[in-house]
Amino acid sequence: MKLNRRRFIGRLAQAGLGLGAASTLARFSPTVFAAKSASVKPLQLCMVSGSEEYKSNETLAAFQEWAEKKFPIKCSRAFWKSKTELPGLDALESCDVMLLFTKRLEPPSDQLDLVKKYCLAGRPIVGLRTASHAFQKWLELDHLILGGDYHGHYGSGQTTKVSIASGASDHPILEGVEPFETPSKLYKNPHIAEDTTLLLNGTIPEHTEPVAWTRKNHGGRVFYSSLGGPDDFQKKEFKTLLTNAIFWTAERKPIT
Image (cartoon, rainbow, N blue to C red; front, side, top):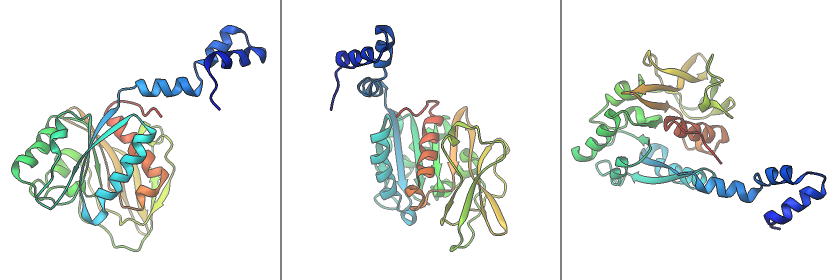
């Protein structure tokens, strides 16, 4: 049942609150919250997808539906059609953040140049899993932009325990994120860049690797995680991590 503002204030007054206090509390009614949220300018997110192995088109589409309902986010899609066709990259010109999740694509030079231009301009980037080898003709992106050191992965069939790195618990990206487990194969990143800030580690028997970090790229904020398998997108912890990272790279806070 909806309660209009005048009646809401009246009931608060009947409860013994003065008009001033009642008016103050009324500003925090669900209706006013909704109006405030609607007034926030949506964050423009360009999702660049092309990782067939990890079903990135499907997982990012589902993430878009979830995120746009909960947060002031408006997504555009640059979803691959083939290994050499990646339409929709024009959205990089006006977006606030690029979410990159492709694997060894070989788009034509004019399309790849749009990604290079975006990255080298120091604009906000969130990279997931195979973004470390996103484009076969620009593998330098891993070292140059993401600060990674991708050297393949360990075998399948092992559960990776994801834990918060020492000293990272207060980082805004980790707000609401608890340790969790994933069946995704653990990536090898033995020597990530010295200017990275490590957020999460992944551990399997006998091996621990960094699985999430941040860095600055030409002055812009970058977040990368080697997580991102279909099972990860089903986990609250991962979706919280990803949402926090998107807003953090844009230097904004997620407001539900």
